[in-house]
Image 1 (tube, helix red, strand yellow):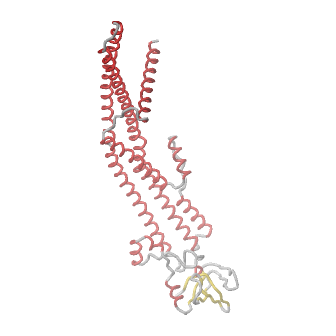
Image 2: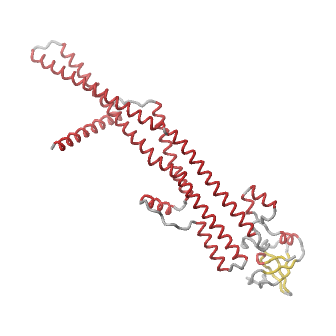
Image 3: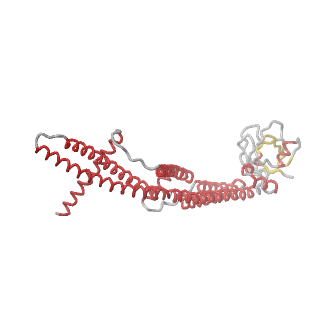
Length: 395
C-alpha cells in the first residue's frame, strides 16, 4: 500500500514537472516568458558537436558505398550485424570476373594464346579480389568502426546530457517565472495592506494573504536556487563531454591515416599485380592484341624493356597504352612483304577475306588506307584480307 502511494505521488510529481516544462517551453516560443541563454563557449561546443556528427555520418556512409557499391549487399551485412551473426562468404566482383575468365580459358583451351591469356588474367583478377577483401576488412576495423562508435556511443551520450540540460533550463526558467509572479502578488498585497480598511476583519484577511504570499515567495526563491544549482551542474557535465570532441577529432585523424595507408597498400598491390600480368602477356606471340573489333589496335605495351618499365612506374595509364608490335608497325609503314604463321583457323566472312588454317605460312603485306586491324594475305593464287590477331610475323 505504501509502495503504491509512493508510485502515485511520484507519477503525479513527474506529470506536474512535465506540464510545467511544457508551459514554459510554449510561453518561450510565444515570447511570453524569458529564456536563460547558454554561455557562448557552451553554444560553440554544441555547434561543433553537431557539425562533427553530421559530417561523420556522411563520411561513414559514403565510405561504405565506396567499399561495397552493391546496396543489397550493404543491407544484408547490416542485418547480419544487427543479428550478431556472420554474413555468408561470397565472391566479390573481381573474384567473380576472374573465375569466369579462368573457366572461359579452360573452355577455349589452355594451349591456345587466348585461352592461356584468359587464365592468367583470371588469376590476377582473383588476386585483386583478395586484396579488395583485405582493404574492406582493414578499413572496417580501423576506420568505419571508430566512426560508428562515435555516432552510436559518444554522441548519443552527448545528446542525452544535452536533453537533460534543456530540461534543467526549463525547470530553472519556470521557477524564475513563479518567483516573479510571487513577488508581484506580494507587492500588490503589501500595497493593499497599507491602505485604510473599513472593517477589522478585512485587515485580518489581507494580513493573512500577505503572510501566505511571503511564504510562497520564500519557497519560490528557494526553488530558484535549487534549480539554478542543478542547471549549473548539468551545464558543467555537458561542457566536459563536449570538450571531448577535440579528442575525438584527434582519434579520427589517426583512423583516417590508417584508412589512407590501407588504400595505398591496396592500389600498390593492384598495380604490381597488373605489371606482373603484363609481363606474362608480353611472352605471348608478338601479334597477340587486345581486341580485334576496334577500329584501332590497343593492346598492352610490353614491359620487357627497361624504358617501358620506367614509364610504367611513372604513371599507371602508360601501362595500358597500345603496343602494335614492332614487326607489324614496320610492315604497315613499308610496302614490303613478310611471311607470317597462322595461329588459329579463320573462316572468311565474305569474298574480300581469306580463310586461314592454323600453322600454315602465308605472305602478308599492307595496303594504304586499310584498317589497322587487317593485312592483305596471299597463299598461292588466293589473296584477301586477314586479321592480324591471327598471325605471327616470321623473321
